[in-house]
Image 1 (tube, rainbow, N blue to C red):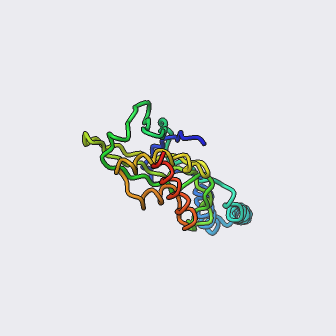
Image 2 (cartoon, one colour):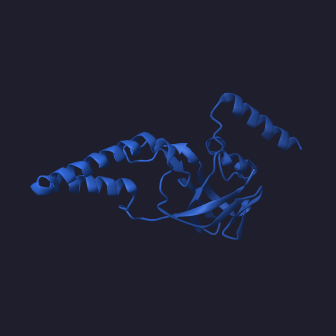
Length: 197
């Protein structure tokens, strides 16, 4: 399992040009200008029909497209058993005062956004969060990308956090997506086995 994750720095732009936004703009322009110019009304109607056909194509294929990256990748986080490496800076588990890890997103995850017909249905996996406070009161907060099921590679690091009392058991279950009783019991057996060794 790969324990290296790409750090993602978000853009704060609210509006950015996508194919869907451009098609909506063209549709609005052609709709309002077709009644203004009677001599080319037929051409505008053809353009409007073409835009509608393209729109339906986008609607019916949205489940096959990934979300557009609204930002850039700026480095890596490596989660090892007893430390994490944040952009080539090693941080040992014992230096961590408080940590929050959200690993609910992964590349290819189906999203529930139906804001418009041009919204994509597959996540790019960059909505995962590392928010930690070191014992020196330094704070590090970043988003990172997870590939499908890559959160499993966090298990050794998260177990070390649990043993160091930097995180509670419920948070470990959330990070590792252990939501079924059977998986929780297997994980508890694994923890008990590690403690006896």
